[in-house]
Image (cartoon, rainbow, N blue to C red):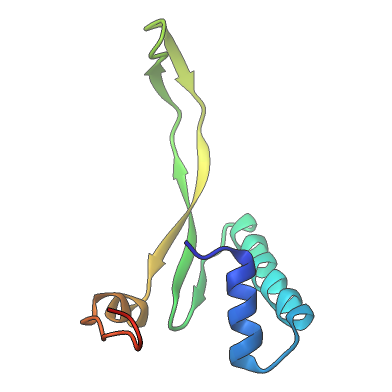
Length: 101
């Protein structure tokens, strides 16, 4: 699984910038998406996908340990829908990696 450090290293290498600049760019990107979703707006990133906020109604659930009924409060969740370019890339036939068996 790729973590934040892996993503930053890839950005720095592919864009030819320092890791410090790549970190600032990545953090700004994440912050922008977060702020857009906090305002309840949809944020589309061409080639990647779109982020949107969905609303879940309050509902009744059960505590699995005690079987007691509980009320689960309403909440907002962020949804990600992959764009066509990303879906096509993920579903493309795998190419043989160099030097791997």
